[in-house]
Every structure is written in C-alpha cells, then in structure tokens.
Length: 196
Image (cartoon, rainbow, N blue to C red; front, side, top):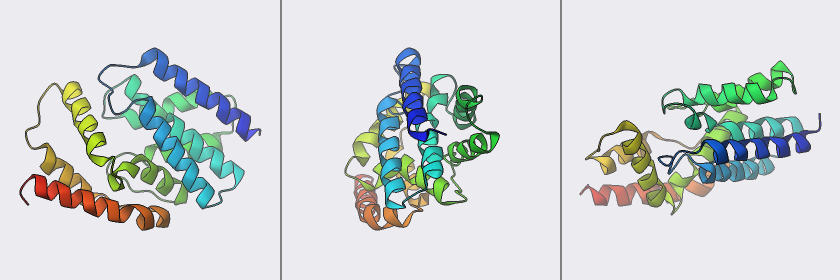
C-alpha cells in the first residue's frame, strides 16, 4: 500500500470537507485544530519510531477525528467521524486497517481510555494544548463554541475547565515529560482565577 500518497489524498479530502461544510460556530473544532492534532501526532509517531503501517493508521485517524463536527452534534461526533473515514477509505484499504483507524478515532471520545500506544498518541495530540501557553486562548474558543452550539451561557467556566484539567492525564511518556509542567502551571492559574 502506498501509505504516503494515500495520506496526501486523505489530507486533501479532509481539507475539502472543512472548506465546504464549515460552520461559523466551530471556533475550536475547525481545520486549525485538526492541523495541530496532525502535527502533534506526526511528532509522536516520529518519536516512537512507528512502523509505516502504524504511522498511516494514526495519521489517517488524526485527519478524520473531528470531521463529524461538520455534520452533527458534539455528542456522537467521534462515531460520525469514523463513519466518514470508512466511507472515504472503504474501497481502498482492508477492513483490518479501517477498524484500527476507527478505534483510534473512537479513543478520543471523552472520558478517554486508550488501549494501546496509537490510541494514547491521538488522545495526547488531541489535548496537547492543556500543557502549553496556548491553553487559555484555546479554552476560550472551546467555551465560545460550546455556548454557541448549546444555546446557553455557562457562568462557571473556569471551575468547569479546572475540573476537566484535574481529571485529564497525558498517556505517552513524551507528553508526560514535556507537557506536565505546563499543565500544572495552567491548573495553578485556573485556581488563582477562581480564588482557589
């Protein structure tokens, strides 16, 4: 299987989906977020020296993992994303590969319970910003989007974000080593913002 050329086609297809079906309320789950997840997934794939077939599986999952937001609600978007992936790749790759990609996409469903390294990689790539200085800007976008899609205002956003941060863990040794300190700093700042 020509993995590299197929990934180029997948990238073009997903970019096209976002170009055609983008919604104004997707201020967080947009192409920029997908590009970030793809970039972090590639970084982890290189770090763990994944075999070509594993690299293909995880990169395909990263490109497709949030496409469901374009066609449905927040709840269930992972399954819809996996279905969109299968619809596009179904005649191109084996059912075994389709299933592995689906499992990686479904691993991002909260609360996450990754079962292997590939699933750990995509979960960490998807929440990478929690351990960076981008956290507060990205968290603001998350809440903008949630409030627009739910049609209601959340008064206790910092407390809800703090609860999410306290329940979240990084799974890969790379992210534990490189992002944990930044995450602790973000938790500290959240606590300070709510007088904790």
